[in-house]
Length: 309
Image 1 (cartoon, rainbow, N blue to C red):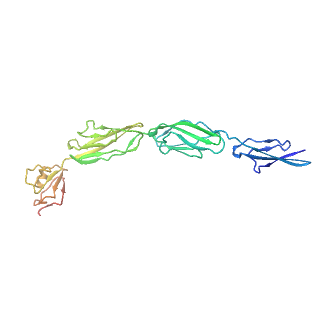
Image 2 (cartoon, one colour):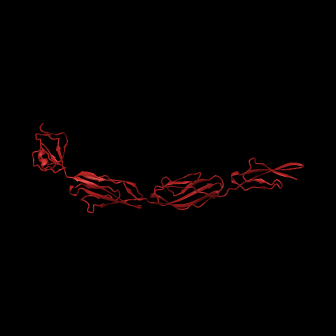
């Protein structure tokens, strides 16, 4: 009677066994152990003998399990790790499509995990990955569609400007997907010269006291929807000018200013601005006018004095 045993390799491959009575060797081949140098031994009353041979294992071609198409929201994190229906040995993974990868899309070459911060600018993305192993290669393709998010305009502050001054503001978005179109939706009858750039949303206006205050509303429209933002542009009347050295016709304008503060104060309304030129040859006045209404009086170009030199 013979007794059979496996004497090599020292660390047997998983699932390799021998029938000690018949010597039958069985194994579910595993490429991870390729090649296997097998040695068996027969032991009987007359002594022992060994026999050795090599089992080479051919690798199987990689087959990637199907990956479902998916929809993600713009700005969201997306990831998927592929699995194999079959394949032998160590795999190397790569992204083979699209040819120009979206920003931040990457693949782990060891695990095949695809990661991406979704960007509507690339919607939709037709992704193809490839697994390469000892037995060959396989590819798998799927589509990642990106849902746009609704635009949200950052707040625009109310403002105060002087009649005739130029005004402009460019809105910004807290969020939003894709190309935006901007429009002025209020006031219903826009002031003369107020305009909006439909691509950037920049609002411009040559301020006119005749229209102030102006309640402005802009609307932005994108693939994800619309949003509006409203603010107030308040307009003060043009300043009244004073030049103590002036001798011409007095109209209170820059080129035909009043000669005295008293004249300017009489012509002004509550809340008006009086600019006194301080860069002339006479930056002072002997007068000490009494002013009985709220006015803003400011020196322009240099200091000025009242009540004497």
